[in-house]
Image: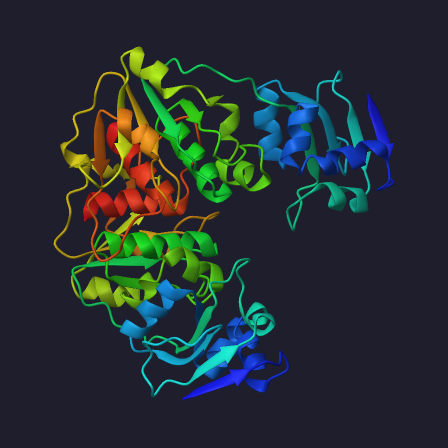
Amino acid sequence: MIKEIKSRQNELIKEVTKLNSSSYRKKAGIFKVEGFHMLEMAFKAKVVTKVFSLEKLEEIDEKIPQYIVSKEVMEKITETKSPQGVVAVCNLLPNKTPMNNKVLYLDGVSDPGNLGTILRTALAFGFKDVVLSKECCSIYNDKVLQASQGSIFSLNISNEFDLVELKKKGYKILATEIKGSIDLESVKKPEKFVLVLGNEAHGVSEDVLKIADQRIRIDISDIESLNVAIAGAISMYHLK
Amino acid sequence: MIKEIKSRQNELIKEVTKLNSSSYRKKAGIFKVEGFHMLEMAFKAKVVTKVFSLEKLEEIDEKIPQYIVSKEVMEKITETKSPQGVVAVCNLLPNKTPMNNKVLYLDGVSDPGNLGTILRTALAFGFKDVVLSKECCSIYNDKVLQASQGSIFSLNISNEFDLVELKKKGYKILATEIKGSIDLESVKKPEKFVLVLGNEAHGVSEDVLKIADQRIRIDISDIESLNVAIAGAISMYHLK
């Protein structure tokens, strides 16, 4: 089905712009992605419900409604300064229980750029199971999606999965925290483990530190700390 | 010297706001930093020429003019949403010739967040000499300063230092590039080397690749590439 939309006041267009709000996304059960790369990844994940584009796209499944929109309408529904001319509306991804031997647990990562970069890196180093605490920013935030480079569609992401449950299942909990830690280089990779990264300002929370089996640090000099996405990447690379 | 400024139209305040422009910073030879942490680092580097704050700061050298400004004036001269209430004007940092055995060369890193994060990481892993190609974004950009966490004041930063000169001095050039590369794990750290990181979209430029002694890659799966700050951090950690 192909239709044209020229008015910025169109009801469908109004709904797409509402998807910038996290609470509206939850209520409606949908989110939006921008650009051809993201569209391709979303198609592979079979979550696309509607496509908005400046020109007719040939390779799109006929069952998925396609809307050809004017430049003005496209500008209204995109966040980027130079939109690629395609926006897709997708169903929110299902919550997936961690099932692999290595799990990444994000304990309150709040910056969208950091979260997106961490997800991109997790996929690159085979950490396919990612658990997000409720304090993390939304993975459907536009900046997260952009920095993630579409990796959210290939990861098993779970919201608020209980870390204690994982510990009961035999996962060792490795938390990035300086106090009482051992150097990353000395860590022997456990067979099953959860790597925990903390909040940008406060680090890993007390509740998580209490149940951690091992605290790990990356040795640095001349500066107080590393960015969380950097510390996470080095840890994941080392434990991959 | 302590003065009060209550008007947003004050000539000095107008000049500070102009420092958001890269060309004005170059012309005037000054830039601005925000927040107490940055102020402290700037003082250590002895580059502070003026301080603007909401309240009188006690520990400031009397020779440096201090201006107590109203909330409205502070909002005008700051970029952050929740300003800490202090802005300092500083002299641009001197261009410093690389002098250590390991040098980081940034070949067109254009995203401010990436550049700032790379500088923070470089300092953490002892890459004190950083050379920026002319295509890089300005280190005095507000987002770069924020992400760098003040590391620019502790690094030897050089603009456009010729890579051929370093090669002549015996430095081995290691470029991050997939084609014809060896895995980072197999790289033997040369005694003197330059690690080159490329542009976010185009990677390391052809001119640099031509003179590179070794191309290195980080093995990844399921995704096309790593973010440049992530690839840089893992490489620096490995070669530190």
